[in-house]
Length: 79
Image (cartoon, rainbow, N blue to C red; front, side):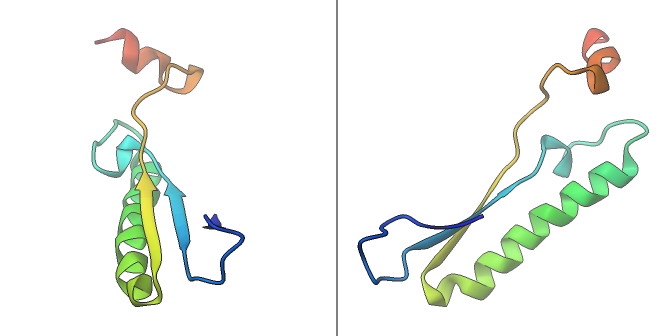
């Protein structure tokens, strides 16, 4: 998502927000492809931030923790 925070301005006041998961840095059994994609998102966020900083574009990543769903119900019950 790219968003101009001040739509009444001609300034380059843009931000990119990438949404990932806590599994970008915390492994989970039987979820290697998922974890790899989240790790890739983390690095994409960092690299993009470096590449567009000189244009005044801010890049942030959000990686929320575990949320109780059917996908991870068994794992959360073990804790």
